[in-house]
Length: 304
Image (cartoon, rainbow, N blue to C red; front, side, top):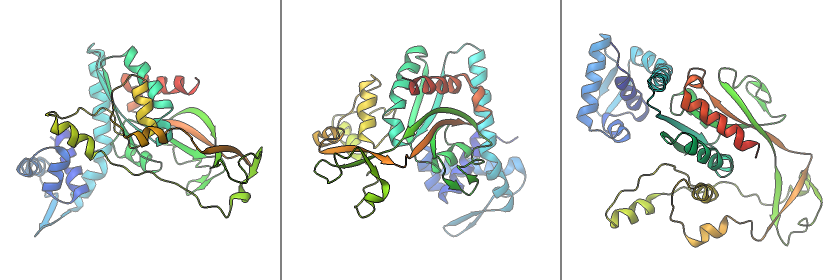
């Protein structure tokens, strides 16, 4: 019989390429990983890995098992959560992935309401942009993902991504209009509307650095390890989560200052640029009470 814990180990080994790296990812020792892989190979009756020196690669059987593992684990998670709810344990776990601007706006309100209504439900938060966030959902690395797609954008699946989410449960949340952001002294700062072409020669800014090492170090020097419920490198999200009463944080003064649009102005961009914001999950997971409640609260937060 194939055990879910063995499949999780196999996926970690496949992703990292070694028992040692898989052990670090899973929080266990290299010998423990080796023993579980031997047990899995004994269960299926065929080798799953080929070891050549320090390198490790999957056999054909191993590749097939990894390919099916995400769906199997998602199905088992759904079964475990639903059985727990039926048994009246009033507990649940939801792994949420969101893009940064969703983390600082929709997520704090939704999770605060979810915690108030279901105190036993724990939610972890990780940030990723689509399409990576959608891949994480399909690979079994999260239960709910916030994603977006731009109106009129062409993808490999067709105009506006018409087919890219066909295998998922889609909860529409809102339509988000994009605005331009220019320096306060910019020649277009007081324009009522700006054509996108007017900004063609301007330098553009995108992206955010990610780092949590200092928090762990400071807490360690005080003699404890912090329990991190939500992980985000987006400073507005940190402020939003703290403001919603979901925890505490330590931030540099400049980080708090950077949350405000100081020294910048927003301008309307023409033609209008919009993106559709949705929450996505797998069909099996949509039946899990904690996941369904999370989707409901995200939808409510989008209407406020």
